[in-house]
Image (cartoon, rainbow, N blue to C red; front, side, top):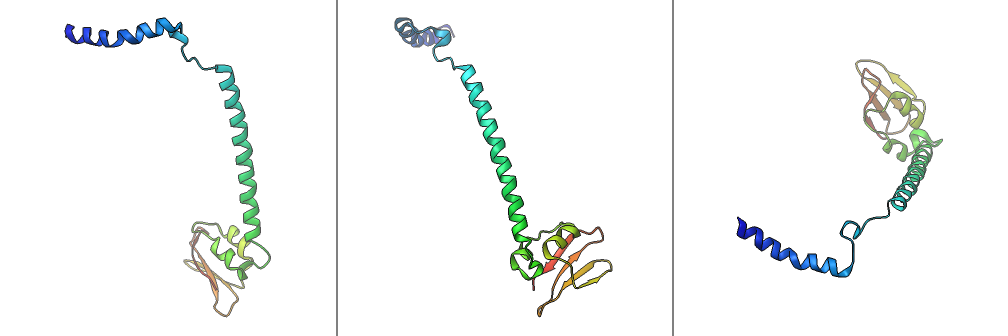
Amino acid sequence: MVKKLVLIWLALLPLAILLECTGVPRSCAQEPDVPSLQSRVLQLEKRVMELESLLAQAEEARKSISSDRTGWQNKKNWRSLSVGMRDGEVKKILGEPSKVIQGIKTLWYYPNLYCGYVTFDDKGQLIGWNEP
């Protein structure tokens, strides 16, 4: 055990001598500039907030574009639907249905040669649809 400690000490001795000879204090050999790092962190946090705001605005713009005046006639609107959407969200995207059938499930039909429809569960959440 003592032999191992002596070997480790002998291995580290040249490094210690080198540090003493270069005149670099051991405690602050590469001490970071804390105030400048704090300033940089604040700048980056501000930038992240700005980018998150822009992302939210872009998402809102995307939603408003996809739910344009053509409603159910636009394939993009059908493809923006997702399971679990509330009936109000679907109505905002596709518009008013031409026919509603209430039962265990609720079906909304949209007029078309191929008859598009959406299906809601008893809680008013979208569970499926068929594009026209």
